[in-house]
Image 1 (cartoon, helix red, strand yellow):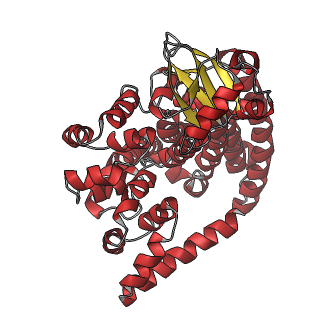
Image 2 (tube, helix red, strand yellow):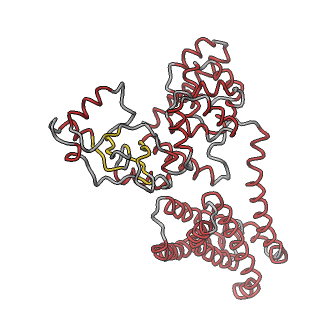
Image 3 (cartoon, one colour):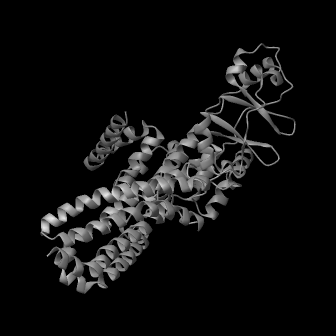
Length: 458
C-alpha cells in the first residue's frame, strides 16, 4: 500500500514539474486545486524553489490556509515571508483553533498579534486558549470545538440539540458531559446515544469513568495513551477539571510523524522541518555545527593514532587492518544505541530495568566479540601470513565489541540525564568512543605485545 502511495506521489511531482516547464499554468492550477491540501503541501515540499513559487501563486486563496498548516516549518516560513499580514489573516481565518495555533506559533510575535486582532471574538478566544499552552503539550494539541451537554437532561433533548447543529466537529465519537460550571463529568459515546431510550437521562447512560487528559501532559504521553487505549478523541481538562477542549486522532498522527522525523533527522544533525530544497547558505549554516563536532571527534581519534606512529611503522599491516576494529565497534554500538533510544522514547527503558538491559548487552557483546575476533584472526593471519598481527587484531576486536553495546546503553541515559537529546548527540559520542577505544586497543596492544609475539611465532 505504501509503495502505491509513494508511486502516485512521485508521479504527481513529475507531472507538476513537466507542466510548469512546458508553461501549461492553467493545467497546473487545475491539477493543484483538485488535490487534498496535504497532497498540495507534499508537491510544494518536493519542488525546487522556482517551481514552488510558481505553484504557490496558482493555489486558490481559499485553499492557502489548509495547505500552509500541512507544510513543514521551513517551507511554510519561506512562503509566509512573501505574504503581507492581510494575506496571512485571510488565509488562516477558517482554520480550526488547534491548526491555527500551530500555524501562528511559527510566525513572528507582531504577525501573531495582528492576526489575532483581525479575527472575530469567539475565534480569537479559542485560538488564545490553545496558545496559552506549550505546543508540545495536550493543551497545545487540543481543539476547543466540541459538543458539550449537561448530565441532567434526557437523550431526547440531546438528539434535538444535535439536529439543530449544522455539523458536528470532525472525529466526534463522544459528547462531553459537563456541569453548569464546565467541570468535566464524563463522556456520552455516540453509540450509547443512538441505542438509548429517549427518556433515559444522560447521567444514566454516560461513562463517568472515562479519564480526561490534563492540559499540561506532554504530547508524547498523549500519543502513548491514544495507542494503548485505541482512542479516536479524548477530552482535555485543567488542574481544576474544567473542560478545555479535545484531542483528536489526526493531531496524534501528526505528533507521531513529527517524532519519527525528529529521531531520523537528529541522527544526522538535521532539523526535522528542514526544507529539502532550502537555499544553499542556510543549509550550510544548519549543518556546520554537526560537521564541526564530527571533525573534532575525528581529530581526537587521529591524535590517539599519532601516539603510536613507531608501532605502525614497524608493522605496516596494522595501518591496513586497524580501521576494521572501530568500524565493527561503531556498527555494534549503533545497533544497541538505536534500541536504547527507542526504548527511552516509548517508555520501555526506565531506571528499574536498565541493569537487565546492560546484562543482556554485555552477554551479547561477549558472544559477538568471541565470534568476530575468531573470524578476523583467521583472515588477518592468513592474508598477511602473520599470526602475531592476527592475535592483536582479534583481541582488539573482542575488546571493542564488548564495550560498544555497553556504551550504546549507557550513553543515551547519561545524555538524557543532562537534558541532551540522545537522538541528536548519541551517534557522535558513540562514534568517538568506539573509534578511540578501537584504535587505542589495536595500537596499544601492538606496542605492548608484538615484540614478544613475533619472537614466539617466528
